[in-house]
Image (tube, rainbow over all chains, first blue to last red; front, side, top):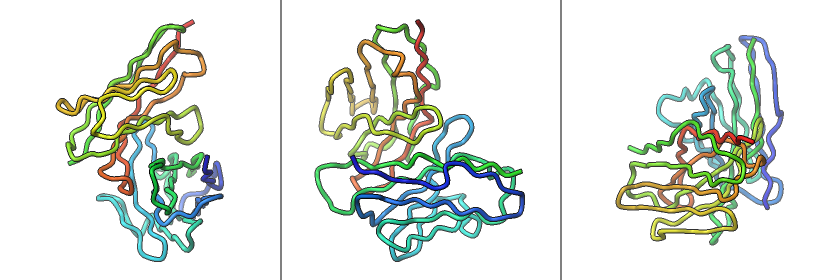
Length: 118
Length: 111
């Protein structure tokens, strides 16, 4: 099946610094990618929808200036957590769908990035 | 609004069947999914069902949809230790829409 790769798999950063997480579709093109955040009690929350060549669409309650999303190409979306704080520590997961519309409706997920802010 | 609810924990003996239940609120949902997440990993799509279907079977997996009650279930026959994971119920309005997830059900396999 199609592969979505996230990098890094885990990162530890100091409070106040920024961290960039990459999400790449390796063998397909994705017009749209989604960023999720998984909370400690397993709740998977959609943060934003990343649209290639245009601004991301953020879900209610998600700070746009805090979580910067860039979707510069059909195979790459980045999430930058700016001025990270310990409460931003979480598991971040991206997903992508093949832009070619077809019967297959599968959204492919990256392996996730564990962010720890100390 | 959109909401997906599922129980947080299920314990099943190896070899028995596991049934994970889910309810959703948006009757417009067209696609309903079951995802599996193993420890420290991303999500893997197990199966999905269209809203105009009542049942879908794929090897050991059986999905039942009661659209009237907005209830979705996943049955895993002959549960194995490798089935130990968190199972997420999810829905989307259309193929290209965002996917809304439940909180996940942790399936624990007893020897």
